[in-house]
Image (cartoon, rainbow, N blue to C red; front, side, top):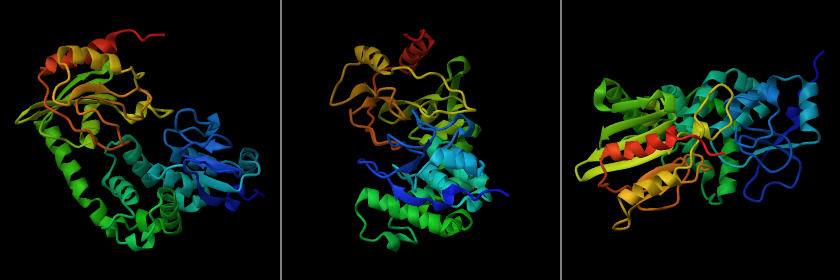
Length: 340
């Protein structure tokens, strides 16, 4: 006779910037102490339960025998995340309502991958991810549940509470949330279709895991990631007033993954310095690069500003450099041996 899972006694919590003082299990994100199930760098996930997504890790934990679960949890009574996103929801659902999660495993993983990796998986995966992300938005049919909640941590907890109480509403009947995803989905699908038909010029260096995608005008980040066939992506954007450049390392190379192999990240700041020597800063624009420790480090010519994770918030400016000059700087950097 199998023992009941000790996870059935867990209560939902949320760990903001100050963390949690009482014993807890942290999922997807990572609080400083205690049991942890996450694919974030530096996680404390036991090797037997590791997977590419935190949702996958939590599903493996949920399928483990009760004795192993109890040994791992100890005296923990809370389960929490320290941020709000789709992979966090999938992880919490697998821990707190495993029967619901098991029956929808493929969709949960597709939605989590859509959000975490920024790559097209399926229309339903996209719809679920965007619905979760925008659950409290003004156009959401359930926005009233969150009326008056302004504190970010409280809002994250309240959204998780609603999702865990109503998972079927989002996972089985996502069409009712169409205003939260339809327009963006149509754009991404259209761009991918046009890209596959030749509207996006692709140059790929398979041995370097590097791709250059050239488009007329802007393109959605998910379109670029889906078409790149590489984890290092340079976008060359041709506009009426000139050419704009933005490079990014895809987030897969930041997470700790099991089945996906990515190139080791390089520090992009020397590349930015090389390009800046060719094109010094002017009119408030400069060649700028993030540290490789950022989840999605960018290198771009534009107005230097702080990156907002997962958002294309930086203002790009037309560059005087030719594409071959910019591409050469990246290729040389990726070909060079890693510094020990």
